[in-house]
Each structure stands twice: as C-alpha cells, then as structure tokens.
Amino acid sequence: MKGIAYGVGVGPGDPEMMTLKACRLIRENDVFAVPGKEPRESVAYQIAVQAVPELAEKELIPIYMPMTMDRKVQRENHRKGAALIEEVLDQGKNVVYLTLGDSTIYCTFSYLQHILEEDGYRTELVSGIPSFCAAAARLNIPIVEWNEAMHVMPAVHKLEAALDQPGCYVLMKSGSHMKEVKELLRASGKDVEMVENCGMDSEKVYRSVEEIPDEAGYFSLIIAKDAR
Image (cartoon, rainbow, N blue to C red; front, side, top):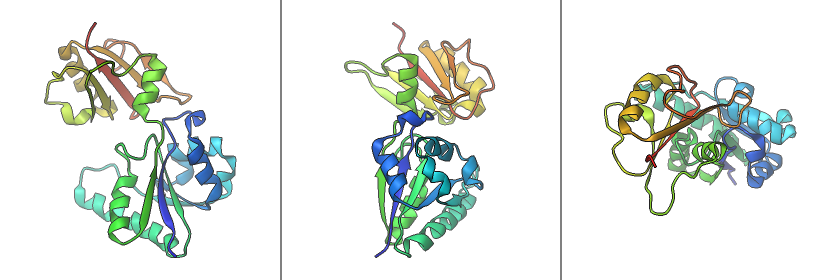
C-alpha cells in the first residue's frame, strides 16, 4: 500500500487559526514536506510548530520552489519535489505538505498534486483559513454583502487593466509591484484597506491607499470595495 500525500493549509499566520483537522494530521503523521530549502525557516512550518510542538521532532522534506517565471525551471523543480515525496509514499508512509493559508488558493502543493496524481498516487487537500478571510476579519469588514461580486487575483496580473468591475477586489501577492498597484487602486475610486503579514508578529494594517507604502512585504493583501 502506498501512502497518501496531504496538502494541508495552516492558515494565514496565527497558529490559533489552524483547524483541528490540520493539527490532528500533524500529530498522526511522521513525514512532512515543506516548501523551501530550509524547512524550519518556512513560514508554514513556523506557524504549525507553534500549534503542534511535537512537529519539531518529526522528519522534514525540503521542497525547493524557486521564485522564477521560467516555466521550464519551475517544472524541473516541481518534478524533483514530487520525486522526493514519492520515495516516502512508496514506503507506505503518508506525507503531509504544509502550506500557508488554504490548500486550494494559489498553493504550491497544486503543482506537485498534478504530478503525483499523474504518477498514480492518492492526494487529499485539507482547507485552511484563507488569507483574505483572515485579513477582512482583522480589518473588521465584510468582504461581500447581499449580491456583491468578489474578484480574487494576484495583483501583478492586473497591472495593465482597470479595476472597473462592481463588487470587491481582493489583490494578493501585491508587494513587489505596490507602487503600480496603488495607481490602479487610486483610479478605481474604491475604498482600499490592506493587511501586511496578517496574523504574524510583524502584522501591519493600512486603512487607505495613501497609508500604504510603495515598498511592502510579499504577504500583503489588499481589499478594495465599492465606495459607500
């Protein structure tokens, strides 16, 4: 019997936001895959180990996920990562892949999941609290109400387009292009708020476009709602 590869979301940053199911799977399994060359430096690992301290004594597999737009380099590293996981699955052991936020939203495990399933392995996804839900709660605002639409996207892919649809825009992965994103937001006429590093010790909250710095961290999430 081959093991199962689990993609487990650990939530946005606060270990208290981890689900009971995520904590149970961490306690019940012995091998964990973590994105990055140094697993213990991974944000996902640092969140999970606070909620389940015994994780510190378990086996960790580093899965290198280079920050590059070169699709060939990406595919090569995804294949290498999947191969490391498959070695363990072939021993009949499960592998729990720890991922920040939710396991179905812009998740690095998705790339490995496709390969694993093509190779005949069983995978399961375990949801975590998405970063934009946690950020909205931190801001104490609803994301959408009544019949409003919600548009979720990486901000970098909207740099040449207007935010002109009605409803709420959730812009993720905004940090590296924040200056350009702010211009889009100003032109949209929407009410804008942002949380940087939501749920972490370094969390910062910004209540307008003017407050948002031109240089912001990778984990910066913007919520832009129709002006009231």
